[in-house]
Image (cartoon, rainbow over all chains, first blue to last red):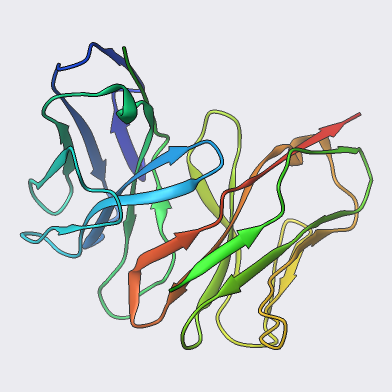
Length: 115
Length: 113
């Protein structure tokens, strides 16, 4: 039981390059989330997917796109990376089915640097 | 809107010292309150939570009490260990939308032998 896994762990991009961050969970959770973590700002929600087939914007969606590929996988894409997107990115999941839980389970994170 | 404020770090303590990390919140309705912990190089994990006023969450020697009258959820531990060195995040979610978790900025704790 791996929980929430993310790839890659580290990535360096040049401004304007694109990349996709991958996330998968094996807990059969319906809801999945992408956050970014910046010093002094806590975690901010980028996008979330309440269930397979749906996605919604969070607090800071600009510059990102997401795909809920299936129940297990939720990817985050940067089409044209900018230095402001240098951050640590976390994926999380939550059980939405009855009984729902308010607890989110996090992956280990992807540390992204954009030069 | 909903928000979480927690004390600025970093906090450095000697082993066996008493720990308090303050957290206050602003929210409509009656939120659930959480403390998440992030150990070096890892993702966040739930440390404890409380879902209604006067509830006390506890885990691994840490405690926090949901105080509605002071809108606070302070984290305490009587005797910290080196292994408690981590970043601690206070957070809330309103029951109508568990998808929208509001995190505080985090407090970094270093415990020295």
